[in-house]
Length: 130
Image (cartoon, rainbow, N blue to C red):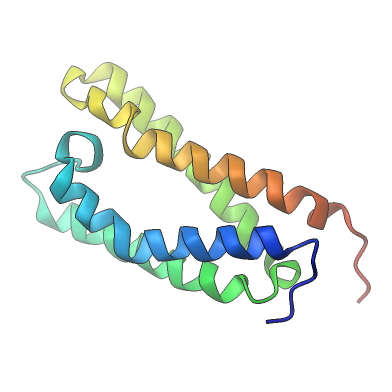
């Protein structure tokens, strides 16, 4: 692992988020469906979401080895998590049956985005040589 002391907390966070994206989302849909499962009558939707997040999780774990070389992926994860959460929060308010998501996956995506943003900012501000 070629992480600097400055990027070690970010590497740990990327690894944890990656593992959760790969292995944690599906169990949460079983244990807390009202906070983690959208469109319960459409298993293809759940499979699509699990596939996307598991793939992202693999790449976040790979990025943890050298976060400075993967800043665009990290920022994509941050911004896509915020956009995803924003859209889901909107739907949670327009469909009262989905309000449990505000405290489930919506909140989790916001936490992921905030933690990664706080940890990647110092690294993003560091001048890089080509």
